[in-house]
Amino acid sequence: MSTSGTRPHTPAQLVRLVAGREVSTRIRDKGFLLGSGVLIVLILGMLVFQVAINSGGESTRLAVVGGSAAVTDALEAQGEALDTDVSVVDYDDEAAARRAVEDGDVDAALLSPSAAQPELLVENDGGTAETIVQGAVQGMAVSQQLADAGVQLQSPPEVDVVALDPDADADTEAAVVALVGVVVLYSLLILFGQFVAQGVVEEKSSRVVELLLATMRPWQLLAGKILGLGLLGLGQMLVIAVIGVAGALAFDVVELPGRLIGTVVTVVAWFVLGYAFYASVFAAAASLVSRQEDLGSVITPASLLLVVGFVVSIQAAQEPTGTLATVTSFVPGLSPLVMPVRQAAGGAAWWEVVVAVVLMLVSIAAIVRVGGRVYSGALLRTGGKVKLREALSAERA
Image (cartoon, rainbow, N blue to C red; front, side, top):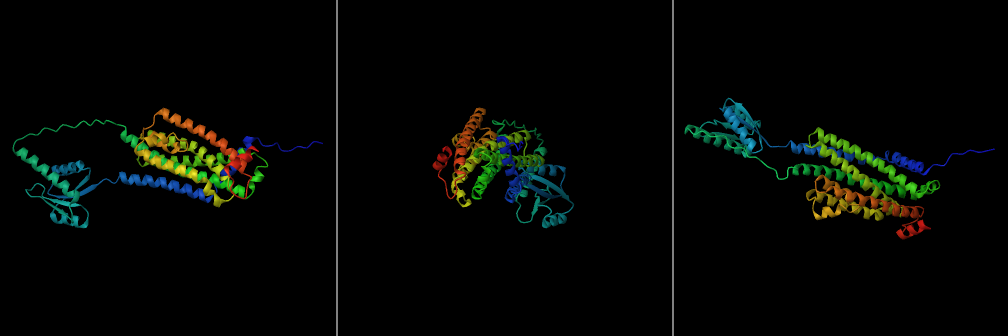
């Protein structure tokens, strides 16, 4: 009589099971959903703020009594020279124009612009309206005097503007987009790094890890946890990226959609590298403690490294070719936050990006190897904080 049983899971299947468990657990977590909502609202808020700035150009509404087409053209031309949108409204008499000023319908009222002594009615301070009217009236007076003297003016030459750095504005715009992406990247790395760390401590404190390790090896548990949360974080990053790109294009916040999309793809790619690095560090560090209260003491160094990278990335947006930005963009752990900004600002050569990626991949391999040993050696040791040397010795044993 033969007995049949279920076939044991392969390592890949075990990793997928752990990854699926992490995704299903976190996607129902209120903290995760709240954090996702906050990030999306933050991105939309930045877009609305940028739209408000772009549409916040100065405008002036002027009433004119006894005007003409020439007066209107002169006022509008003077406003254009002062980067102000001038709207001219014709009124039949002074009383109507005065009421318009008093009611706030117009900023000022110009009376008899062709007279020897025109008058400008204002509520309390002429401000920009006074400057515009004064320039327009003086310009018309000079033109009239020259015409009366029989002087025929030729059209003035147009100045040919030659930009020494025609891509400067585009680079600045792309750097701003990258900086916004780095804010999201930094937030997600902190968020998911803490998810990994908290999950490790929860499993140790509840002794669930003993049951899990009865059916799988420590590295499989670690790989599944990192993979599951990584896929969830990548999905969240892509959702935010799509919303941000669509919103920026819909609100006409950026002028270079191709450059925008390329910058966003770069930030997402660096998120993958950054997450692999920090998730391994956070998991290994968290395995050294058994209580949530002790978690902060072991993940603080990695958190500080993220903060340093974020601060330097802000500086890199201002000076992408500076010594600090250049050097830190090659440092593993800092490069995922600094290099995207340098790339977007046009301050990084292609070979620099390749070198930074290679250094990051090498460091990830080293962190995963050492972190996996620490994780394996400390995972079953409860009751207090485990020293790093003890965890490594236990894994070798």
